[in-house]
Image (cartoon, rainbow, N blue to C red):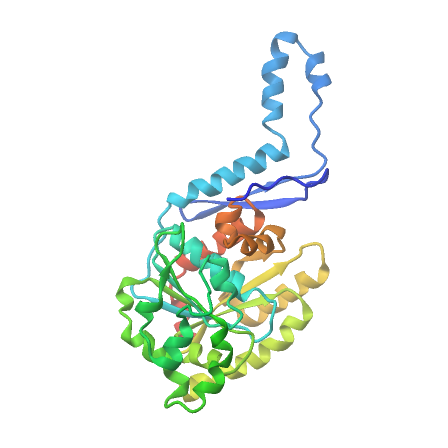
Length: 346
């Protein structure tokens, strides 16, 4: 794992959340203005100065952040509940840049780290999920394209993700860019992925997460026909709200004509910046519309989340103690402990 150095005198305010059992115990870490004076310690009784100074040194904001990181690593041994049967979820939003791929990858890694068996299907021609999970993407690599167009079995295409047990990925390559055109002339073009899932023994899996492209074309339709649940990441900005209405209409169309079992199970707020009033307003509006479908956890803006894919990693393995990693860990845990009580919304 790359070693990261602090880059300046100012350390931002960060909030970490801890879980003990199923309860949530938030521990807020104030990361500004904490200076421990050694002179003050030395002015006290010399026999006490050394011991008290050590306590003071270990009570600095950076020390508390380090303890939070160690706590995050320690939680990897916790086993989360596994669903009674495999949950197939499409991570969809036709607007780009809202965190679909980041959400898919980090939720998958977090779930796999806690005892669930997860398959990620990269259905985005950009292949960013494949890159983040360390998949080789050579020109002649076999990918989800060969499943959709050439009927190759998913089991033959799924590859184990390096250094993350219980996690597999069906990668995407540039070939997928032309798949929508090639699918037009094929029989049952909207259900090619569903047929592939039907031939795959999902008893060996707990979750299948499909990373959809930022569009509402045939690839996204294939994902929605193949799954039961839709997870919608929504960026906490105004323009993100404009695209949600069109997405909801398309989900209703797919539900009416192609997949009556389809329903929205989860909404995740991403790129939340608590310093802006707009982010709070967007979050409030989304919660007002979707209600309990919205996860309580919100994903903050995080530099570490953006850096991780350049190292072929998720933020969960790149920097487990970062705010982004902790937030995705909390979101994945919330997802795992939720029952599928939202089926009445179908």
